[in-house]
Length: 301
Image (cartoon, rainbow, N blue to C red):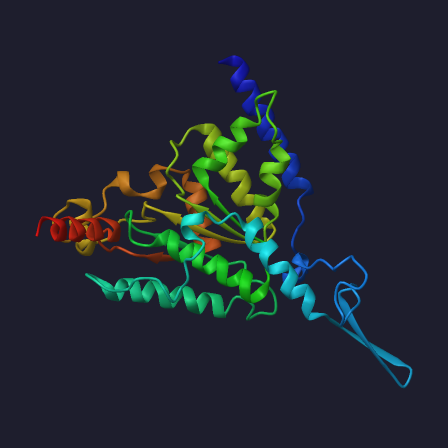
């Protein structure tokens, strides 16, 4: 037990050092993801240099070759780590029918508007999104769709992580025979231009978990890097008449303390989330449960 605690303390020290040397992202814009083709003759327009140069009257101009955009998209999507189940998620195929359809439609429209305004100030916005609601309402679909759209449209360096899986990966680096290092696990999380943290609050809130989360969120906050979150826990008590079917509560039930994010992560991080992301609450019945229920009824009939 004492040895394990020492390993975790060492991991946090390593995480702190990673944060200190992580790129700030300032001024990097979306061009940080671009790599110039290295093989001569790879592209007939630029000869593999990545730039098309035009000369005239002794003055030259250069523009980024289209091949750099085409070639890097598959790599950016692969490096984002979006799980296979969510790789085809798009804003346009997000389901907005059924009970409380207006809530789903509002969530999709808010997400689409955020994507449109991502570069409105001339640089990536440092204000992300926080998708809140019970399981099965489409939070992860919207987060994955937003990340995918940003990569396709603006060629950002994105990253998708499930928070519980991330903690497991960090812990696995404690083992002497681990093929991964703390740097290889955490560098993409700390430096991604856009990060999705799925299932925030799902992990038991131990001091170690809280400190890892603090170091990640604070590091991205101070570097003004965009972060999106999904969580089953509400930021504050809310009337949830629309979610009462899913949560087995009476109409207009107020979320108990156990359903608040403050019961899963430190209060100071909840306060930081208000600054880092715009909440999008989807208090709708569980879509997966509805689909399964309809399928079972059809099979019985």
